[in-house]
Amino acid sequence: MDRFVIEGGTALRGRVEISGAKNSALPVLAACLLTDQPVILHRIPRVKDIRTMMDLLIHMGMSLENGETGAVTVRAGSSLQPEAPYEVVKTMRASSLVLGPLVGRYGRARVSLPGGCAIGARPIDLHMRGLEQLGAKIEQTHGYIEATAPEGLRGAVVHFDRITVTGTEDIIMAAVLARGETVIENAAREPEVVDLSDLLRKMGAEIEGAGTSTIRIRGVKHLTGAEHTIIADRIEAGTFAIGAAITGGDVEVVGCVPEHLTALTAKLRKAGAEVTEPAPSVLRVRGTGRLLSEDIVTEEHPGFPTDLQAQYMSLMTQAEGIAIVSERIFENRFMHAPELVRMGASIRIDGRQAIVAGPRRLTGAHVMASDLRASASLVLAGLVAKGETIVDRVYHMDRGYEKIESKLAGLGARIRRTQ
Image 1 (cartoon, rainbow, N blue to C red):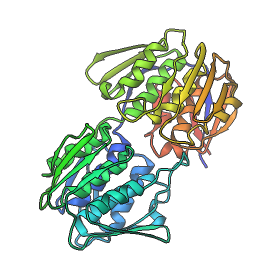
Image 2: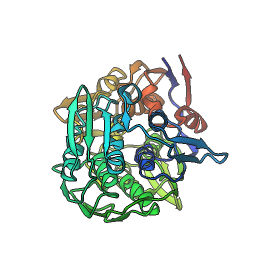
Image 3: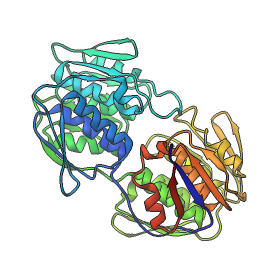
């Protein structure tokens, strides 16, 4: 099992290129199920979750071809098996994303309940309830969701009791081929939802309101092929931005979308980092030598992303004062905190709040990653810790970060992968 060995004490400096967004590429790949024509996708990140989704599409009968420029062409096979078995998707939360397109186009789906990070419940009931409102019949047996709509789906008003990103994406994909109009209320506003909708519109879908809390979809009879470039990964960009601040470094984050990161950059500025935009799609973050504690509350977009909470907690261990980190999205996303404490951090957990006192002198230790973003927080802590830090179970990080150790090493970090 791979691990990272980090020798702390080096400030990150230089430029780093951001990969395509994993959380955008997953639904975009699922959307390829909606057409029998080729879809050409650029900037697909080479991470484990994407490989799993590609394996799933191939298992169902799709073909994927890697081009010389890095583009991936996805084509429908002559026949398709609308099933996502446990053996293929057991490590990935996003398996539910194929429910909508399969039922919407083929009238049936059998999908294993999702796996992935153990950061709390991500109930799929919102997906199932939405599909039922569109006319699908849903059953849950033997760890699988079985959905059927032999007469096709029909448009309806789908109101989410709570905001769900994958639920919003799933219903959008189900509704694009449904009869009539579908209105999604209390929809997720994340950039990844907008990116999916942009691709679907290129394929001929009629979608309005993506990026707002109300999305309208008028069903069409069929979709065509298209060519699309995945947006930049805002979580990867945010992780490197925090890396510059925590190490007192100077990093240009290249190829990002700064407006997707405004909740983070506002906090970084208040915490004492210097944040500028020297060019379009470039964010420069410079540590000024003194960090100040600043509270955060994780919220749905455009609020502070839950996927940057763990990394930000590491930053606050080096800030003067008391910071309260409040987690409102997932109920079990502080599993990195005890590992940070082992490195010398002062963190107290009180329900859904973590109280972080700093600055604390961190020292290298042998720590274990519990999930994808926890991995990143421990790596960031290792960059500023005195001595050697060993981060075990970095397969979690491989699910969502492309060549993270190479990119960090390119910025001057002393990090290597071992077994």
